[in-house]
Length: 206
View: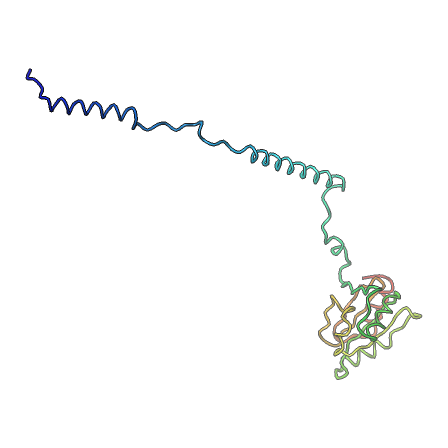
């Protein structure tokens, strides 16, 4: 075999040294699992506390529902129980001052437990004039029935009474019973129809 030249030996030695350096110093290290930060203990503790609080709230709600006898009644149950065909009239509180003297007179009769017949009319309408005559001819039943005839132009002065009732044309007659339920009769009304409405109101029929 021919003798290897010196330059070739130097090159081979350099290659071996570089390979050794790469293996020792430059080879990538595997990820150190121990260096990965663990979840904070405080966060875990707060999550456990929140879960415990939620379970306690659910248990309290279940106990309250059971003690009440089952499912809670809807807030609108009282409204749903109102008799069909009758619109609840406004209930003027005793400590509320009426806006004017005319409204005060009607409110006073309502508070005294009378059946109130309230006619909103227009003097220029034939049906209005006929309805006004029928309303004025109603029996007062020994003072148990109060009748008020009001121009339709003044309907805005009776807001505490007409609240919840639509009065946008004349003639419109409201019959308000002792429970302060209001029945609206729109258009021409004869005495027989009004008398029946008043009798129903006196008897507490809707």
